[in-house]
Amino acid sequence: MEIRRRQAAADIDTSQYGDLPDLLKRLYAHRDVRDPKSLDYGLAALESPASLGGLEAAAELLAKHFDGRILIVGDFDADGATSTALGLLALRRMGATHVDFLVPDRFRFGYGLTPEIVALAVKREPSLIVTVDNGISSITGVQAAREAGIDVLVTDHHLPGARLPAANVIVNPNSPGDEFPSKALAGVGVMFYVLLALRKCLREQGEPGGDVNLAEWLDLVALGTVADVVPLDANNRRLVHQGLARIRAGEARPGILALIDVAGRSRQNMTASDLGFALGPRLNAAGRLDDMSIGINCLVADDHSAALQLATQLDEFNRSRRDIEQTMQDEALAAIDKLHLNEQGDHDLPTALCLFQEEWHQGVVGLVASRIKERWHRPVIAFAPSDPGSATLKGSARSIPGFHIRDALDTVATKHPGLIDKFGGHAMAAGLSLDRDKLDTFEAAFNAEASRLLDKDDLKGVLWSDGELAAAELSLETAELLRSAGPWGQHFPEPLFDGEFGIAEQRIVGERHLKLKLAGPGGQLLDAIAFGVGERLASDRVRAAFRLDVNEWRGRRSVQLIVDHLEPR
Image (cartoon, rainbow, N blue to C red; front, side, top):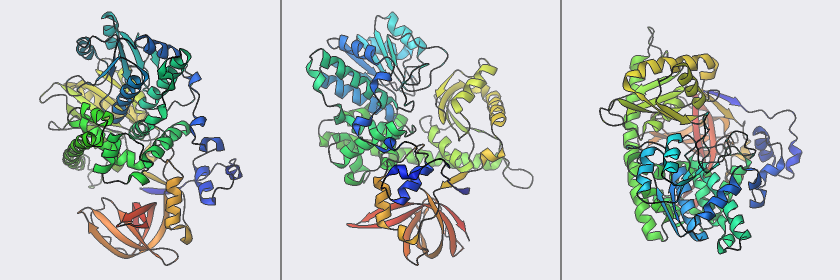
């Protein structure tokens, strides 16, 4: 891993940031913040709904079915769960007579509005199906619904294919020609904008639903946005900031407060990283191992007692998920070590990795792909059988900067017709299915595409640092300043710093984590922890890449360094 320091573009004028502390000016310049208005996180600064295509038609379609039966078809991840919960809560509050939801069982039906899901939906006799966080690739499913006499509203944020489904209305900022400036909206963000348009429509019609305060559910929008790892552009940062403010004020849904409790986090000090690394995984665990309906019911629960019971169940799922993931990760690393050693005993890995084990759990392969990608810094696809002994494999892909994984799969599918059954996703993550007997052919084709687009420099892991901190900046005050200056996240990364330190103390805690006391440049001793290191360091000096964190223990607050990388000196 190589540590490189960020540099601000030469044409950025940091004086535009006003009287902010110099450190924040430096950090915002490193993140190419050119318009200080993008640091305005008030609701009034949100991008106008007017430029998001299909909103007015979507609002009219929803209002038309308020006396009918509306069925929300969601996805089985945190974005899908929060989108579904948001739609249920808001539509019911706005006056829809009957609103229900249906989430596909990922192990039986897979992703999206498939014909099989439509067949289940028909039994509930909906007059309107609303897809959330899916639907843009559901060509045959939408057709089946329309043939059954059901209207369809597709709300999605995934990249569309060459052909769009024949829905009554499609709302997707990534639809061809759509002028909405924030292409990074998560599925829950798209649904929030649909509801903004519906409220306007109801208000113009003089309906009571036109007075509903949609900000009440921004905690759901924040959770789904962060958990889906979409880029935190200015508009998404506004949505996340506002949701976090509600959580810190204790005004969140009982289900979100219950998830915070079982995760052992502080409501008053919640950050975007808490949403991504503590709440999101617990919610996702239901969809990975069991039934995301449990997660949705937690989010829509009206009282804390019921929500806590469901959140506890989600926490148990997450513990099981971690055990399964660790076993699969160990097996994946062992397979890589065994298969990709050259004659000198050094690793000689292909540009991209395709991994498969017969016993792997399809709900967890994405996490394994992510861990292996982080370790070896190259595109990774992990496969598992769709069912034990099945001829069909389900794959989950993770990528690195410079390699658009969904476009790469599209290229492979175009060059090799019939090789991939179906696929979809984003630049950094995707899913696919293919026949087991085509895996070797696919691996070769995928590796060829990766080798065409990536060179050796692309495969070097890089940690981008914001530089050194002065001795006075290694403080609790700085850590609190950075916490309040967020939200930080995808494409707007949390500040990372580097520097040299002496090691005053070190010990292993929790079997795998290295707890340190580091001597800083001013001679002060700083608490630090490096997760997953597994062993003590032989050196008495290190160069560390680290983040500043506020450590709270028994009512005492202190600064702590979260170490991402250590280099002995």
